[in-house]
Length: 201
Image (cartoon, rainbow, N blue to C red; front, top):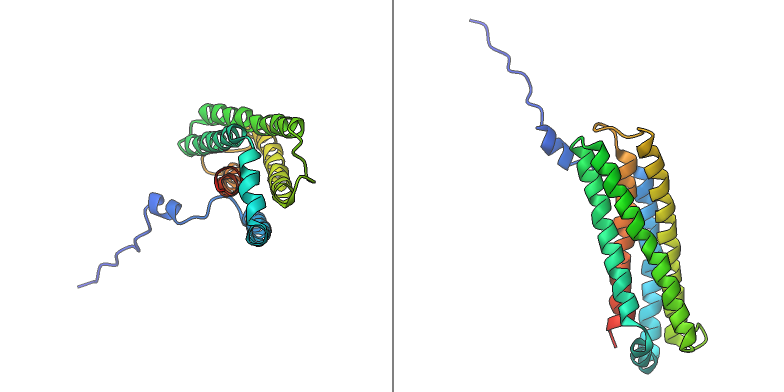
């Protein structure tokens, strides 16, 4: 009697997919560097706040919470649209994926515009980097975040160009995932910055 050899069971595609890290290793090195950079800046924030509590309490009252809220909504919405782009690409819906990515780009472009209007409002109310320690830290942290966001917007443009040229398929869309991962990380950092400057006092 011969023994029946059963084939080795392979993990279900969905399970295998869920264990895969989205994007590529390079983007995660960049994201880790971004987190470390802002971790250092947050330490500076807390040290300054501990030494000058009155300045931080008074400073938050002078900022425009409307501007901070608008930027938050823009970041969260664009992040959602880019996540939808990844999800529809994964489902094989290339046109819808491109549409979501375009929507994410348009909303993301609202961030530098909103930031420009906020700074214009600040300067009109004599709020600049020399208005006190709170505003020095505020400008340094938020400008750093804006730089990272601009890099992200340039990344969206690059990924969109590749997407339109057919650079991504249902089997290979790691570039789109890498962009989404970076943009979500930048979004998370803003969600920490927002209460630090616009809410806590």
